[in-house]
Image 1 (tube, rainbow, N blue to C red):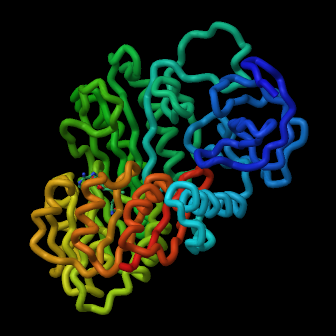
Image 2 (cartoon, rainbow, N blue to C red):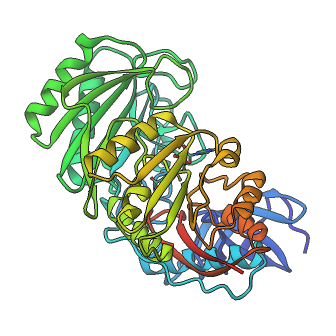
Image 3 (cartoon, rainbow, N blue to C red):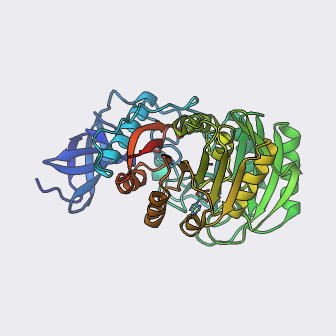
Length: 462
Ligand SMILES: C[S@@+](CC[C@H](N)C(=O)[O-])C[C@H]1O[C@@H](n2cnc3c(N)ncnc32)[C@H](O)[C@@H]1O
């Protein structure tokens, strides 16, 4: 059957593809339908037609799937923060397991790797320890407001419509962060709007208020508020900081990052401390970590504990091993494993993260970790030790091909590969399988209501 752009068609959704879209086949031809789940029956319009697939948008829901649950957030379906709220959590984690398994089958060409059921997130709402809200001069309207005609632009502080850089929904509350975060969001928004200073235009690159970044420590129930502005105007931000620490004893840190760069990144060229401390403390298991406004930390603290426990279990350390932790970030995995190893060597390209890692070692009395700053592709060949166990936790893009070759040359007995992207993980496994067997894979859900999944693979030398 020849599908045409603009055509209306009745479909029953068969599966969810990696990336979160519903998928079905029409005479063997793949059709992706956003915002749908298996067993939905819909009338959809074909909006894109390519050689191998088409994309369609729902025009009418004929019969909702029994896998659906009512979404709690009024922004569900419009906001990019969580696209899967309408899918029951048990189904979310089952699909995530399936996506990891499919990546191993189709990309790594490994048919019988045991992929365990996903370890779920202890909390499925209020689990995020960091939220970044963007300012915009013009709030993006919700679908039900779209027909209301011309209205003056209203400023926004909120979250993006998925896939857009300039469409910001004016969010009143985000259910992915703990409740106090929403009260802070609401106070900060009111203050910004009444300040007489403009929100930053995401196209014009003019204006003052840029981002609000909130960090929460689960262990201490402390908050850090980071206000990102385009210039330094202490008189404009100090009263806001004073109000927040006075009103909320849990707010122990208020900082102001100043970024004049046009890139939409909530990291300042420099930072002012407005109130309280410059860092907050957080714990994962028995270890304590210092978090500054811009330091990397897993966004689901309780999930990170489950993830690191899996890594520790898969590393199978006896106390005599030298461990190499590639892409070590702020050293959280290295510190988590240190007491079970002879030595842990971490490698990471961001110098500030390595400084955090060293400080975190001191704070936790860990004295058998050392860290090397550098791009792994160039630094790894200069390594002066032969590791028994390798931990690899690369960014979404996975490992560079040269790094895979260097890893094979190092030939450690065991590798524990941690990934937030099953596709690049499987691509790297395809290269590593020449020398390693993937013994098992454990998906760990760190991101409920999104299609994202973290997975840990245990590799043993053939
Ligand atoms: C997924 S994070 C891992 C963080 C850490 N293992 C943790 O659990 O907190 C990936 C890290 O790789 C680092 N990175 C990315 N490319 C790199 C490269 N070419 N060489 C070294 N480090 C790199 C990033 O800066 C980031 O800290």
